[in-house]
Image 1: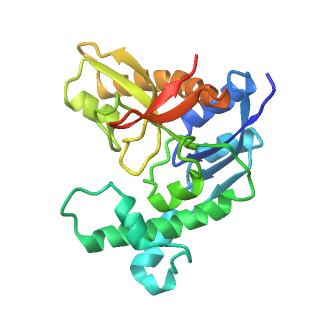
Image 2: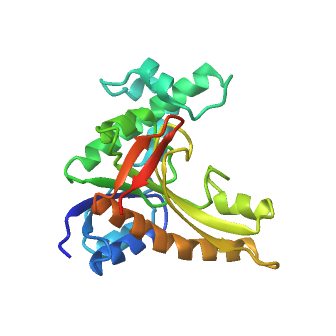
Length: 255
C-alpha cells in the first residue's frame, strides 16, 4: 500500500494516539504518513515519539503567548486578517448571555496563537490534520483557514466519550461520575462548537461493577487506538463525505 495521505498531528501530552497512528502508517493499516507533529506544550512527551520516528516537530507555546497578552494586549498584535465580528458570529463555544468582553479576549488570544500555529505548519504540506490529545479549543479563525472546502473537512478529533454525551475535557471522568454502564470513544470532524462536529465512527465497551476511573480510561484508550487509525484510513480512501440531511451535517461513508 503506497503512502499517499499526508497527516499533520497536534498534541499536548504523551501522544499515545499519535503513536497508534504512526504505527498504523508504518504497518500500512493507514495508506499515509505523519508529516509533522505540533504542540502547544514545550514539555509534551509526545515530541519524543516524533523524534524517534524522524518526524518534523515544532512548538507553539500557547502559555507564553497568553501570558504576554494578559500582561499587555498592545504587545500582542492581532493577525491582519482577524475579523472579530465574523468569528464571533460563527463561534458557538459560549452559552447565551456570556460576557462579551470574555468572548472577545478568548477569540483574540486564540487568533494570536492560531496564527502562529498556521505559520509553523506552513512548511509541511498536509491533507488531514488530526488532533491527538490537543487540549486547546480551535476557533473559527483557525478552522476556516484549514477547512477550505465545506464538503471535505480536514480537521479530525478523537473524543473520550460516546458523543453527543459528555463533550468537553473529561469524557471518561464524566462517564464514570454518571455511573454509565457503557463507555466509549468517538472520532469526529471539528466544527465551531465543542465536540459537536459530524461523527465519523464510535467504539464502545462495557463498564463492569467494580471498574474504576483508571479501568475505564485504560479500556477507552484501547478502543481509541483501534478507532482512530480506522477512521483516518477511511479518509485516505476518500470514503468520507459530509452531507446536510436537512437537520444537521452528517458523515456519509461509502462502501
